[in-house]
Structure formats: C-alpha cells, structure tokens
Image 1 (cartoon, rainbow, N blue to C red):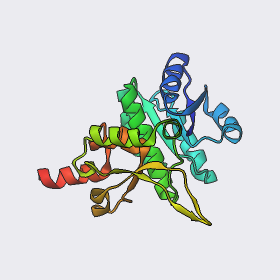
Image 2: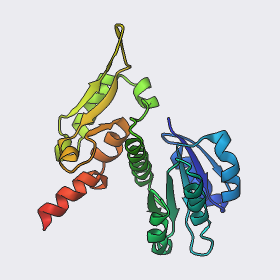
Image 3: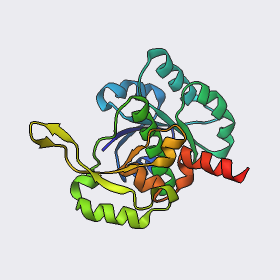
Image 4: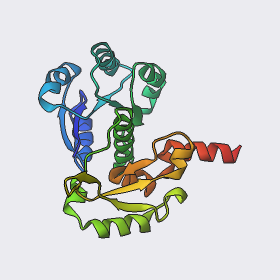
Length: 219
C-alpha cells in the first residue's frame, strides 16, 4: 500500500481528494506547502498530490524545493481547468502529472497508478505487492482481470508471478502482465496489479504505449 500526502489549502477539496486516495492507499493530508515539507520525514510519502492554483501557485514552489533538494518523491497536481495553463511550467519543474478537480474516483485511481508505475520504472524497481493481492484468492483475481481486460494487447496475458529467490524459497505470488505493446514502443513490458486494474482493465488510453499505437494507426 503506497503512502500519499495530499496538500490543499481548502478543507472540502482536501478531504474530497484524501478520501478518494484512501480507496487503495494510505493517505494523509495537510493544509500548506510548509506543513507538507515538515511532514515528509514522518510520512515518507511515495507520492504527493498538491493543489495547483492560478491565484496561489504554491505547488510550483513545492516542485522547486524538490528539484533543489533532489527529493525523490513524485508530485501529481490537481486543479480547476483554468490551472491547466500552468502545466508546461509545472512539467519543466518535474511535475509527474495533472488532473482536473473535481474528478471521478476511477480517474484519480488511474492518475495515481500511472505516476507510481513510472516512478518505480525510473528507479529500476517494481511496485510492492498490493494489500488487495495479499487478501484475495490470487487465482480468482487473475481470472477476473483476464475477463475484464479492455486493452487488446493484454487479453489473456495476466498471470500469477512467483520468483525463485534461492535456497528453495520463492516470492509471494502476485499478479503480473508482460506487455508486448509496451516493449515495442520502448517501455518496460512488465506491469503489475494496480496498473492492470486501473489502466489495462479500465482505460487503456491512459497507457503511453497504447497512446502511441493509436497515434500511429490513426494517422
């Protein structure tokens, strides 16, 4: 379960985002960038979700701080549609994504999953086994995901992965998918449960490899 720190100066939006982030993650919230910087050491977030506002673009200061200090925490920005004009500046400062507020639960799930997946890939790591996998009957979960698969490249490709660790030990079984389409377009082919659940089985257009495929074949 990933740790998420939500930063928003208004209580209602802050609680709205925090509650939705808690669907699959361990989320806490603070009111300001100053509080967030003070909370990082205690919370040790895997991701920060910060409000991007035209009136008070404090999120840009957060990005500058992270850039100056080399803090390896991705930042997902949320804001009203008008704040989208700040996206190019935010992207140059290292923002990992932007999503309009208010958002549906599934849209936030996808945005969080995409950011965490890319961050792990950039670090050369794989995501931890999710709490859902640990609780569920893994074979039933595999069957259900293959049934729900929306992406053509992932059909019947979900499998149970268990790695040999040596000395007769194996890793805990987990859900995985090795995607030939991602490999074709230069992305790491291996994706795991949360990405499969939120992107492959829900909205394949959120996958960069799927986007490139569609772009080439619609030209």
